[in-house]
Image 1: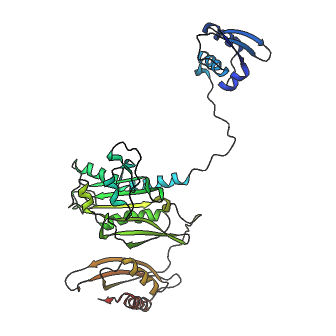
Image 2: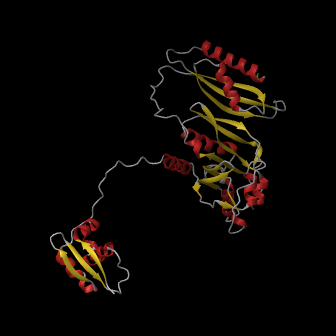
Image 3: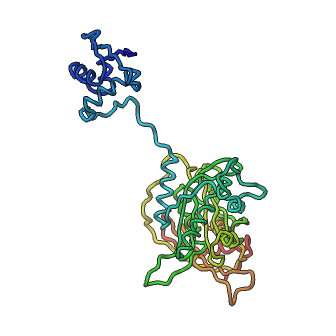
Length: 397
């Protein structure tokens, strides 16, 4: 039993993007087993009888496909669709993630891609106290039993994989989703072990330390357009005294930006990494990286017209006193002419009492309207020393 369909030449032109001559339509369809009869030659409508063996042809669009295929798709003109609306604004999160990856690549890290499903034993050290990782209802195996609460377990396993293949200097990072009690969020994390500097014949290798890892967090903070404040933290996945939380202040609020420190040797050993080789890790919340003041905050400033004066001071302070607290006290006690604070030495040993550290700071003073005198610099330095003594009991060396 045959079936009859109506085929319109105008519809063919609309679908294919070009008009097919009526003679070609009448030439193409009959050899394929279709019966063709023009019902309205002026309006370009014809009735097509579909043979019973062509069960794939049930609509007009199926006939148009047959015409186009045998007329030649290669003969169809190449055109661009008409733009009826402006292009949508790209998602800012895409640009943010791309910028973070570009920055970490520039810092010498290689990008890793790991599974969001991990085993429960690997996830537990990175969960908050008393919180279990989110379990899958029907896991494929114990290796993929829970959702990762952090990107670090997967990166640690990648680090172990490389270490077992005689790679000692490893720098890996990843951006992706993590799953906590608050839900799903985007994060960026990195692991760093081995040498801090690339091997070269002209210099000896230096092992990576906490301040190298902190520098990566600083770079990510600078990219977010706001300053970071570091606070000591005790986290079961990190070594006490070699770990810190970074807080970002922007738009009138302070939020947790990320965490950085040395991975606990017991965790590394449990995953198969040598416990005596330190691994430094860091992880930041990408939602906080995107938080920055609206608009362009960059402003050009003219070069200074007047010279600066530099003063170095060395103070005895408690070894547990954060450097950020020292900088804050210096700025609060200094005049507006203080333009730079740089810590250039930290010493413990002979001549320094137990529990104390000798911290040396370089202070740079400059005025925008005049040349400072030695008396100006000395008065500012004395005020800073007095502020440090009053706030922290510091003693000048």
